Length: 432
Image (cartoon, rainbow, N blue to C red; front, side, top):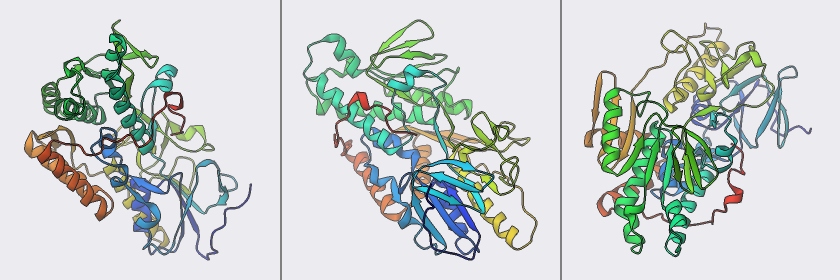
């Protein structure tokens, strides 16, 4: 395998795999460190994943939640970007193998995030719609709109039912937010676009295997979210699992069936990292790290963000797989690199939980902020503000904000475009 060309440097080389929240924060904080930083990602852009569901439900265009990595990190002078998927790590030779060649490292940081977890169910993996990447969001948007175009001309009642029904699996923030966005489409947008269809026949079903929604949040948030979803005419079924799905019929653990050509899978994620790491360093698909984010068994390999499981008294199973954790770990690891080069002792990572939130739609959201728990309009405004300032790039913030303002005052989602037709046989063809 050929070596990947990069400029020569007298400084040690730090390779970072993954241009997500953790990887970007780490690069920016090491801008003046005595390192040659090489970032690998299979895409040339960073995705603001918390708003992927709005791309899928025609609220935003993809370029408003994505930003080129080269542009974003251009001010960092000791930084090099190479686009390519990293297949494996050779810990003995201290090198990585990628689709574009091989490169050695002095330090390696794995920040590859997570991928969809189908829990081994092959039928769901083959036919459900995941929501972790921009191409997946665009596929889902096209598929939903194509279904309504087809429903407009079909004379088969069974096909009509399966085209108009949409099932979402997973009652976490993603599932709740997707269900709420679809509820808004059904209530405010689609009846005007398709006046020949009877939208009383459209069923939005949210399936959750646990006894309540938003299991990682408070009981207050769960009850409020359920109440809000019912106002959007979402049929929430708790303690319900999908056992199989063939692309037309979803079978449930209670013996019931749902006829739908659209099953959105938001039921879980798992770690996503290259081959070559010792199995003893892996737990439930994530890399075991110490309080300094060093991968167990390695001195110069680190993991941050969703892929890392750092156990503590407060988090016996590791930190939640959330953007704030990734950002804080990237920031903290950069500080430890600087301390290490200065001969100072390293500092242990401590997560500062700034709260959890989820939106269900217009004027409806839930927020857990320490002991403070609230919902409704004020929570919705907090949710919008936090997400707006978290988006990378001023242009993207401006576009997202203008889209939200337009939608709020006009009850219109202006991105109901089938840019590329979605063909079912290509479903899940791209890797995660």
